[in-house]
Image 1 (cartoon, one colour):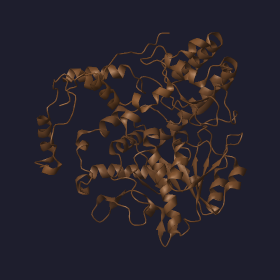
Image 2 (image 1 turned 135 degrees about the horizontal axis):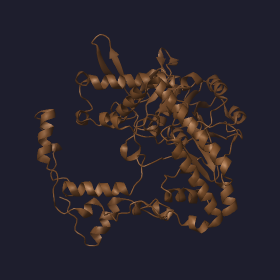
Image 3 (image 1 turned 45 degrees about the horizontal axis):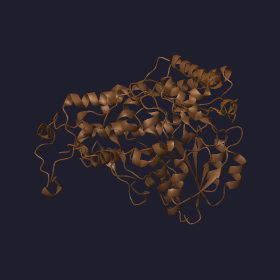
Image 4 (image 1 turned 120 degrees about the vertical axis):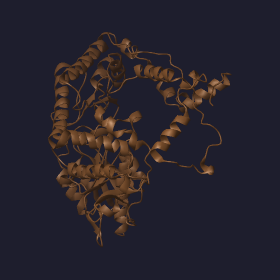
Length: 521
């Protein structure tokens, strides 16, 4: 085994604080004045004391975070095949544009005429996303995929409310393979969730869906391709059925990467679609976030000249022919209500703008094609060369963006679980796939390699899974101790999820109890 991750015994940055200064705020204030002019902060908004920040020299700060980065793993180190998350490479040119210094100090309410370049970029992004999804208009406001989902539910709620049938429309249908946020969003929107099972062929059970459909149905939330990586073969019939009871069809855009440039939700009959900018369009997840979850709609009539466009829970960017200016158009009284303040998470949106502009239509199409080729090559090699893994639900069907592999055969033969496999992958220098999701697959390993990965990296991943299978038969106890080559070994999963063990606030409090003086001036 050649891989061994750096394992620095690195304390919290507050513990390193020694009263040194690598930054003075006087210099920052001068820079602010250069950009903003002589801005006076009202007395009631000023601090009464200095912020409690650790005090270190610049070199100490750089070394601290460099050591932390060496103890971590990200998409710049190697493949991150987290199924459903679409963890792809984040182009550095997009980073440069998205975090340009001139954008950092813009006020959310700055007059439109002062930021025409920014508004033009966001306007074009709106148009591109509408075209990519086959929708008519998008709002860029929602801050993440889950918020985009809730926005979609809010639109469904408002649609039926305006039509005077909200008391009747009490149910939203959700497949059992959906992302967990789908039923959560529906419930938060005040609807009863009706779950539909998955058929053996991997499609939503069409007969069960038909049986659940009624005048009470407000809408259906559907991911296509599904979490199993399969394209819903009954989609046109499903759309027709939902519309026959005046329901709305909502598209969860988490898996758009698998059909990018090849198929569009709007052409399938969807009325509402949310998109994950931090998935399909490459802006970072997590620490590189926050995310962005634009919501697009078909301009479908509601009543009395009102259309779904009027229900959007956020502003849209428009071009005013009279003034020849781009403007922020805020929603009116028919809107589902503001989901959040502002026009969206601008750095993430600009990242997507650069990504789409760089690739162009043909490039985006190739993104989808290569991601599908990578997934199916991975499945073919794994199933041909191993016996411990299987592909449930329509195993003969080609997958799109991701593959849900089951380690149940390996568990039954050797006692090695999907979790053990994931930990062993870490020991071999790989990021583990999503495990135990979706819940309908026992011992699930959900792998999404995206278009970022080379054939050589996919081969290495398959070889690692083969090696783990062989070791499970030869020395299973060794796998149960994995990982041993990472900066953090196997942890107690119950303790690891308890807030008192994971919050920095708790650690600082414990240090104080132990009599250690922290410099927090």
